[in-house]
Image (cartoon, rainbow over all chains, first blue to last red; front, side, top):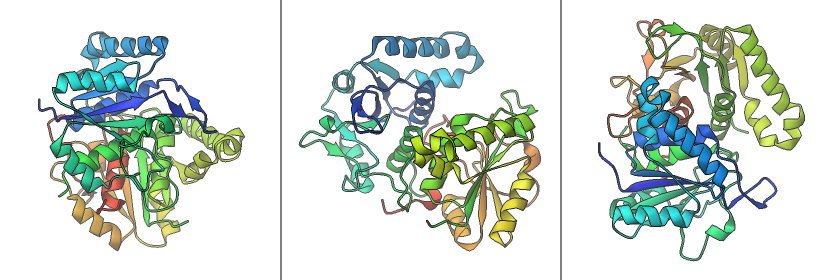
Length: 187
Length: 187
C-alpha cells in the first residue's frame, strides 16, 4: 500500500463555537470513521485526532480497538484498514511532532477554514504537496481558533460552491479538499 | 439564491447490504444534514430522500420540522436553509416524477457507485449537466441495487482516490462528486 507524504489533523481544541468563543468540541465517532475512510482512499500517511480531553481520547481508543482488533475487524475489515491511520494526540503541536519524527523531515502545516477566501489557491497547494510533507489541519465546531493562525502559518483557500452559502460539514470539506489536492484532475 | 438544474437523490431502497442482498437501509440523520449542506453549498435545486418506509418518512419529517420551523430554525438558521431543499419520497421514480414536474422538462438520472469504473467520465458528465436537468442518484448501504441499472440508464464513473481502497462514505462521495461536477475547476 502506497502512502503519500500527506496527513490530516482534526482539531477539537482550540476551535470556535457558534458565538465565536474558544471551546473544546466533543469527538464525533462518525467524523473519525468518515475522515479515516477518505484518508485511506486518498492514500494518506496518517490521520491525527486532536483532543486534550483524556476521556475523549479513551473513547477514540475504544472505537479504534473495536474496529481494528475487536468484533468490527472481522465484521468489516475495510473499516479497520482505514482506522489504522488514526493517532490520537492532545495538541496540534503533538501531532506535528509525532508526524515529523516518522516523516523524517520538516513538515508543513496547512490550515483550512470556511472563511479563508484569501488563502493559498488549490493549484499552489498541489505544488506544495509535491515538494514537502504536508499536514492539513481541519477544525471542528465553527472552525480553527485565531490563535492557530500565527504569522507565517500557511492557510488554504476556502472551498466555495459557487454562491454565498458556505456551511459544509467537516466531513464533506475534508473529502472535497483531499480530492482537489490529490484526486486525478483529468477525471 | 441561484438554483442550478441539478438535484440529488439518496436511495434507501433498493440497495445492497454487505452480503449483496437487496435491502432497505435506515435513514441516518447525519446523511440528511450533511448532504443537504453540500447540496445547498453547490446551489442544487432539490435533495430527495428516498425511503418506502412510512415510519422513516415520519422521522425525516420531524427532523425537517425541527430545523426549518422549530427550535433549530432560530438556533441555527443555516441548517434550516439547507434542509429546505429536502423532499421525502417513497421511490426513485417518485423523485423523478416530482422533480420533472417542477423542472418542467425531461430530467436525466445519473446513477453513482463505487464499482463503476467504466461509467461516464466526469468531463462528459459536466457537459451533460449544462445540457439537461440531472438528478444524481446515490445509494446507501453497499450501493444501489442492480435492478436500478436498466438498459440505457446513465451511470457516472466511480470516484477513485489513486489506490485500490475505495470505501468512501456516501456523505464524502456526495461532496466529491458535486465538487467535481459543479466546483470551480480553476481552484
